[in-house]
Image 1 (tube, rainbow, N blue to C red):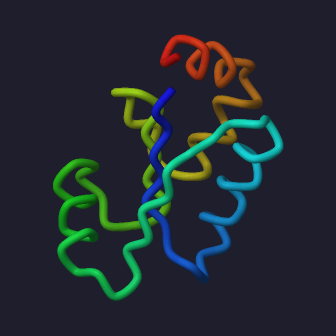
Image 2 (image 1 turned 90 degrees about the vertical axis):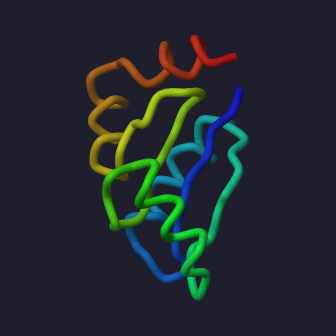
Image 3 (image 1 turned 180 degrees about the horizontal axis):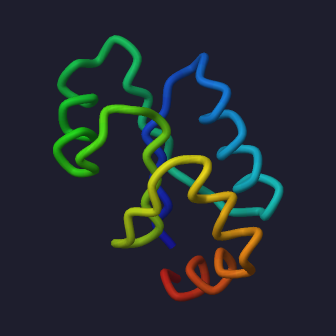
Length: 85
């Protein structure tokens, strides 16, 4: 499964999202945008947003930490993770 999270080192929302994924045993690729304007521009182009984190599960753009946690609370995150395997 391809989980990608664009993040920043000092972003509490990024830490929160990564912790949720880690607690669920989900491997993810972290793309740190700190000091990398090209990578941040790529994230913005793909997500249509400038804030971090921006999370993709497979081809699905989840959004940020709040949206990831909302999926978990709604009981939909595991199904999305499983579908992207």
